[in-house]
Amino acid sequence: MKKDWPLWEVFVRSKNGLEHRHFGSLHAADAEMALENARDVYTRRNEGVSIWVVESKYITASNPADNGELFEPAQDKIYRHPTFYDLPDEVKHM
Amino acid sequence: MSEKEVKNLDAIFEARIARDEKIEPKDWMPEKYRQTHIRQISQHAHSEIVGMLPEGNWITRAPSLRRKAALLAKVQDEAGHGLYLYSACETLGISREELYEQLHSGKAKYSSIFNYPTVTWADIGAIGWLVDGAAIINQVPLCNTSFGPYARAMVRVCKEESFHQRQGYEIMLTLCKGTPEQKAMAQDALNRWWWPSLMMFGPTDAESTHTEQSMKWKLKRKTNDELRQQFIDQTVPQADILGITVPDPDLKFNEETGHYDFGEIDWDEFWQVVKGHGPCNKQRLEARVSAWERGAWVRDAAMAYADKQQTKKVAKAS
Image (cartoon, rainbow over all chains, first blue to last red; front, side, top):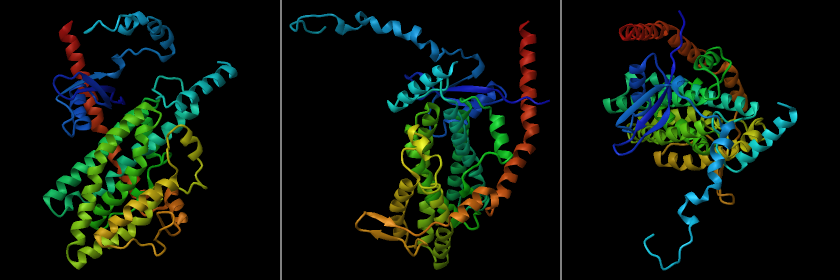
């Protein structure tokens, strides 16, 4: 029997009030071991108060080759930004 | 893809790097960029892993509990650094097993400095002070390198590295303030580690084959000779504070350049060690391979257990 440990992605919340952020990845046989390894590898100096691990194969990522159709349409919608609208200087608090 | 299309992609890619944009794993990249990064990042990861061996040698014999705790933490950090770097390297499409295989078969290199023995406790001080000091100078510019995962791993590594150097220097300081025998031990360690530390920056610019391409890709931001000079300039005054002598009769501050002039490095020795004929090359690789092979049953057992738990969970759910 020869089976390599799968790859996991590690997300850490550095303190309450902040979101979990991607910290890196590691190999582990199962979720429990992935959590334990994540603690040793990524939080040796109080970097976090909460850890998420997810097996890398379950992440679906967008393809940079599609960036044009995905993200460019937002570029010409400048009316989504407050500075698009002309107001006289006398108007305050807006 | 036609040749013309690839050429076009190449040009777009080089322009992105010139604009200081970061490259992420799924972005298109020239094959040579990918291969060069796999080579450098894995070599870096292997160095961290093999680098644990010379220091691990002294954990059980550290002179106090304080020193032992610090050394253990440092060696654990090196393991962590190796793991950050291996996973950064894997984003380029090579598996962890392939990376290990390259190390164990001798196909991949690691930093030659770890092929020197740690014969006294003072060597642990000298390694932290000089070897980690040189590593910091090599690594800080990499926090800004073009490949995102490598740059992010380096930010983490650099943050942790400064404790390593300070604990080493403190060991040297304690020895130098101790008995004449202790001070002699510190001097002896400096004598043996000085030149190999200078070699850590690699061949001279004239001899370095990768420098030009690596500068373009921001895998390097300063040349080997510039980094070596920076190391010497900042380390010599630290030796003065310790009251020990750098083993180089030609070392002299040059008022005109504002830098230290130094003697000729023994490049024959450097190439001998790179080619596998250093004092400990064989021992280091054997230790690494044996740890991997003797741990195989643990890895297999963990995987078998995970599979069993998974099967149980599925059975329960259905």
